[in-house]
Length: 327
Image (tube, rainbow, N blue to C red):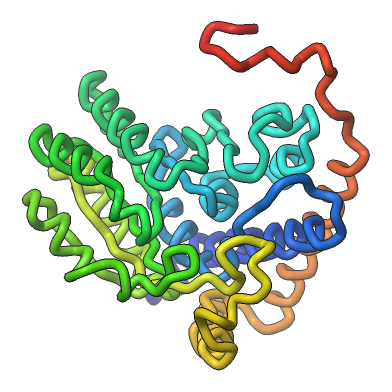
């Protein structure tokens, strides 16, 4: 049996996970546009291969930390549609009982220590999780997802220094989607991002973040090396967000062109390209891929309907779960 066929189950699982992320985001966007979702949210569409490629290399006890653009990481690490939509809509069945919203979803049962609205805010959490794993003598790994804009935060340099000194099992995964909010990364970041990690003696890699196979191959190698005590590592993943900085960023053409967006969507789409590869390898035909997409679409729509009818937290909970040790 050739390599693609031998790994067909894993490849189909990765395809489904990327489709799940896209379906979730499509529905989240519609909830916002129809004024059914409070607050803002930040779409992950276009970056699916990053979250899925890396999380496929992890086990449930490995930890991840996420960002304000965190839905993709949550889904890739095992989060369920119902609980996620309930959280976005402020319902009590959400992962944080509806009190965290889009930017603060955590699911510790799957090793997700939480998304974080503070730019770079989860860097210390992931590094702390890696320190804990080393102290406890496990071989668990922590992955910190963050955007290119977060590399301007001083915290990143502090935790890289500590992680390098103590050889912690942590992978810093920088999702470079080309823009820091409304400004091109090239206009605000001098030099290369990999060089910044290398300055601390950290092995750094750059990979095509639209190719789930390349992302997964590199992640699998680095995760196993972390388990052997060879960490930390840094990965710069070149990717692209299809939407604006947030769902309300509808006039984004003033900082990037429609032609640029269309080029990424038509030639670099991670789901379309991976689906084509699966067909070429004889792993899944067009009809099977269509069936997968349709099933996930229905699952997402059913989860939205459920969340819209779910109850809100009781008013008496307003000061609960605010402080450590509180009920």
